[in-house]
Image (cartoon, rainbow, N blue to C red; front, side):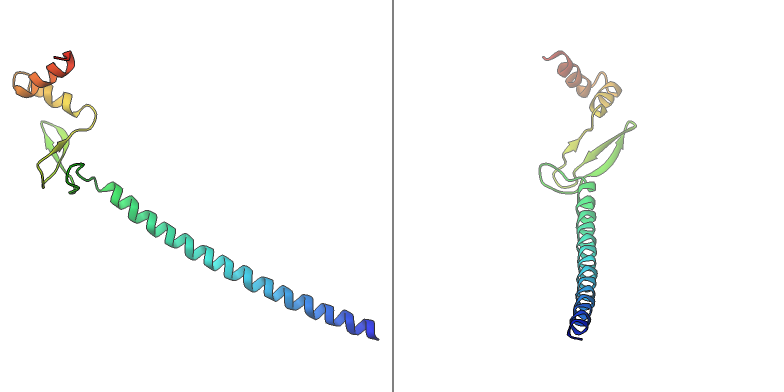
Length: 111
């Protein structure tokens, strides 16, 4: 009879341990999901900040401007103009005889 009592106690103890393990597993899943949502929210904020191009000089948000069919990035604060690869050359070709074209040719020839 004592062994039956011990087996029942062991079964109750195992059931209690199982419920406890289930509780902590559920709590861990909820905490992980909460951390994942916070991380995603932070990432989205950083992504938005990276997408908003900023001026390397003053940090103001650059505004896109189209000139001679070329999109350039211009700073409304300090007046700086920033070119992506190929944009400078395209504008220089459009202004072949002006100062811009001369600067471009000098840049190409190294003078």
